[in-house]
Image 1 (spheres, rainbow over the protein chains, first blue to last red):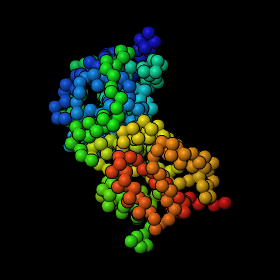
Image 2: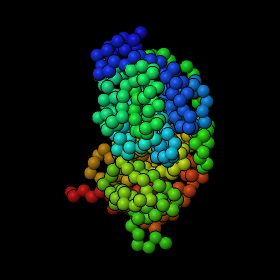
Image 3: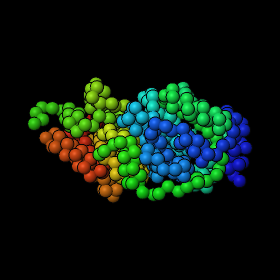
Image 4: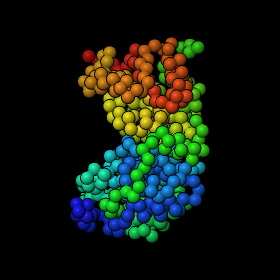
Length: 207
Length: 174
């Protein structure tokens, strides 16, 4: 498997986090949401696994616009400062829009948490290696952009601790998790209008 | 009704009267007085994004959270947003308000701006995105006010292309 080879190469990266599973971590994350937090699922397998974790009125599934999960989450966080907002994004997607980390750091939204699923591959397009496979450390990039509260989750327990702390202490914060190359478990219904309308209803917004 | 207001004063007043509180921009020389006025007015939350598509993502999230937003960019920056328009803003029916400072015509010196200027309206038309090129001060408030109301009512984005005939444009000392 090309992806396994890439994960093996990553032993030399700046972190030694355990390789976990995106769907398992997504379920853990969603299970800790107790206050109608908004969750923005990035393109592809990221929102497929969010979809598979079960319906929530406060979930938004981004079907296109690769790289914009964090900007969308930032917009929600600005509009609803009392609601915590979580962006779920893949390594390839974040690499496409690294500038958004600098914008988040500049604005310092206290209610925004960014979770990065890093499997070192463009999984949905055939497993081509991303720059994070061997060289780019996305947590270091985030810190360099000004997100002081950025960390790799060493394992599932630490992921839980970091996420709980992010919800309690406020943000902005970024948690990165190394994940395997298992495909997403579900397939999001491709109905952007309904997804958007349901999400707005879940946020208590009437047009 | 606009008296001797400048174009940027009219834009600020029209955004305010339509509850548009968030303005995200990628800087432009011609838009500088507008950007400075927005920063100086506590009614608005305004800041620079690193890229135009990022700005569109931010106002999309804000709209879904109940806050109206506009984005400002120059013509060359428009060339970076067709994917965000086609795969996020249009299919999700987001009334994004897009102000473009028109470069590439009426005295342009930068070939890159001129090429994007030629493609901008065909791209918007083929995406079915409403767009208005505004050349006259006396029509500015009407076009922007009515179009914001239409965008919200019909859940569709709108683009305002502010011509050098309106703003003065960027002057090249030949």
